[in-house]
Length: 39
Image (cartoon, rainbow, N blue to C red; front, side):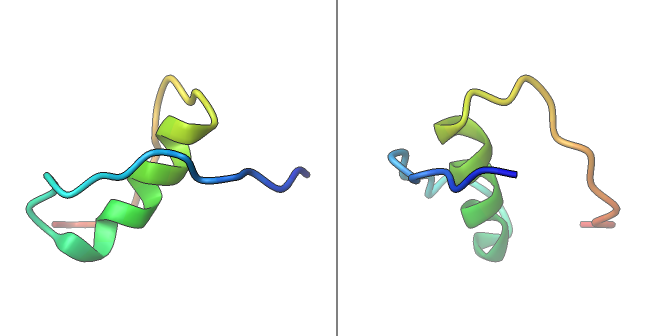
């Protein structure tokens, strides 16, 4: 496990509560996101 510094700002998501997850993924260079979110 590692601590990731969030360096990306996302404001485009249709559900603003999800922006933080996209910011984290993009800041760490993730190539995919797996979510159980039904939105």
